[in-house]
Picture (cartoon, rainbow, N blue to C red):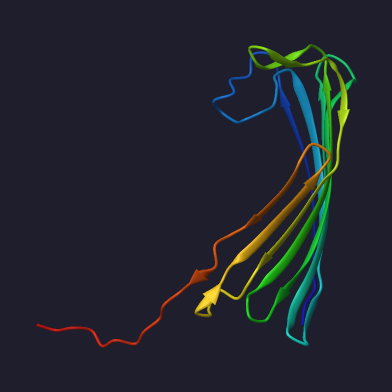
Length: 165
């Protein structure tokens, strides 16, 4: 039985002349600091393979100053079962600073300002080796509430001998 601990940190700078074809970035002239910690203790009892927990922070600031433009904080966790089913949850707390109004349609724009909101995702995926299975995804947030349930999948399995000519 082993437990996994992972720690990562990164830094990225996109100057004003950065070509966004090389990597998607939310804006130019920005510095990005990121870090995450993940822990996955292995249990292997009562039908549970392991638990997992993680946290991540992405911080964007302008290269020309120290003003924060974007911050994404998230925490996730879940359970992996012996039958390959799993349950996940994510709690996200993004922050966006808009220095200028942002048009999303010709008649609607988002005003300049600071925007912070919460977002919670819950996902369950059943054992995919069975004849029937599926998944369910719930998303709760300040801007929306959505529930998505995939169609119940029926996986037909048969042991037909191969036809020969």
